[in-house]
Length: 226
Image (cartoon, rainbow, N blue to C red; front, side, top):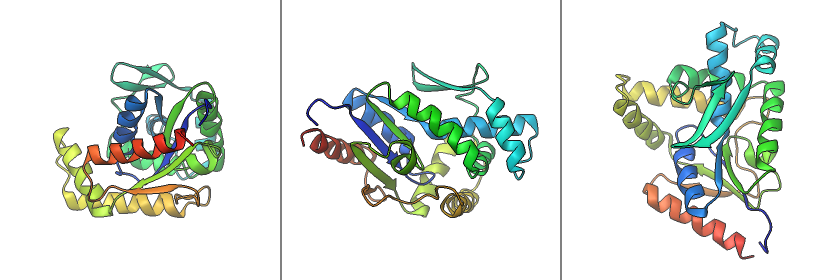
């Protein structure tokens, strides 16, 4: 890359492991990781708390414009703040996940978030993950990736993760929720989820966590030496 800033854009569906993979890759490369999904989750949480109708685009957009979303990197990785409150541990429920997907459908909400994400990424070398990073947030990124896996494998991983947190949801429920989220993300009118033409697709269905990390590191290092 001849000394240029390293920006890695990573897209992919829910349950693909983007956040944990991105944390590991960024750590190995010595750069920061921005989890954009957490920002939409914070907006979703805000909508739930304020009783905002998720089907009312105007109300959701007004609510998002009034909300203060900030991120900071500290012990344990990224911390996400909603109106000054650290909500990092509150935004990983299935209810918040569905609310995040609902608010992310709206163009003006996405514009608000993209503007903030671009400001953060412009300041330093960074790996940014989400659902429209390659297309909208970092269209000029050095490395563009689309991390995915089969719906069944993503649901299995999500189910095991939820079990560790004490959830009693069945695998079948998790799979159905995941398929619903996929349909919502891929069929939304604004920036539907799909790989860009220049993105490298990384299918993790039959790979271990470390194998996925190693593969992405290899891709990034090859780009860095071009």
